[in-house]
Structures are given as C-alpha cells and as structure tokens.
Image 1 (cartoon, helix red, strand yellow):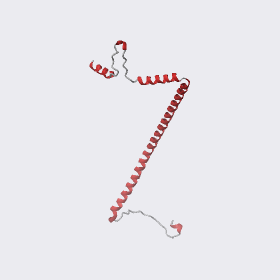
Image 2: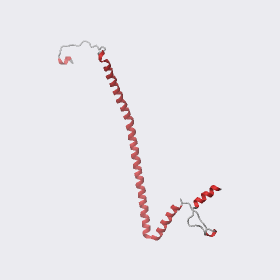
Image 3: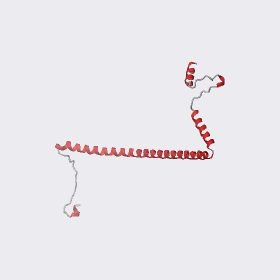
Image 4: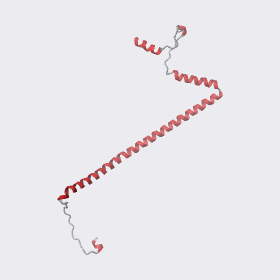
Length: 147
C-alpha cells in the first residue's frame, strides 16, 4: 500500500509481540473479552434454539391447518347429506303425507325406545291393578340385589 502512495518507505519486517494492556485496566479488559465471548455464545444458542423451534412450530401449524381442513370437509359433507335426506323426505311427504308422517314417527320412536328401560305388563296375567306410575326399574334393581 505504501508503494501505491509513493511514500518512499519500505517495510522490511513486521514482528508481532505480545501486547498486554496496562496493569491498571487489565481486569476491565478481561471483563470486556468475557462479555464478548458471552455475547457470541448467547447469539449462537439463540440461533440454535430458533433453528430447532421454528420448524417444529411450522410443522404443528401445518398439522392444525390440515386437521381444520379435514374437519371442514367432514362437516360440509355431513350437512350436504342431511340436506339431501331432508329433501328426499320432503319430496316423499309432498306425495303422501300420512304414510311419511307415520314412518317418521315410528323411526323416531325406535331411536328413543332402543335406549330406554322397558317393562311390559300383561293385563291377562293379573297386571290390571298396576298403579299408573310405578318405579319398576328401581324395584328390579332392589330385587336383583336381594337374590
């Protein structure tokens, strides 16, 4: 570089020697060096954490988005199916109201009664004196426990 500027100075040799700061500031100098090392370490740890957590978060977000899209498709298809069923029943109802009403009633009763406790009392076998409300399921539980 000196030749480019035409200074007329020629450097024959460069020797690097150990350069320690003065004793009065050596502790502060070492503190600054440690702080720089800590800063570099913290930056590297933060970058490693970012490189670990960001892809995981993106993956979780994509999973949630896909689950939401699948749920949306399921709900829309169920709603379309229900609408088609309703239209089918409605068209049948328009053609024959009595039969359709009876069929819907019987279907609904079948759904309700399949999960209900049922007790059948035969009038011909002495069931004529039964009180209109009798907690028969509770009585059956007590009898079952006494046996």
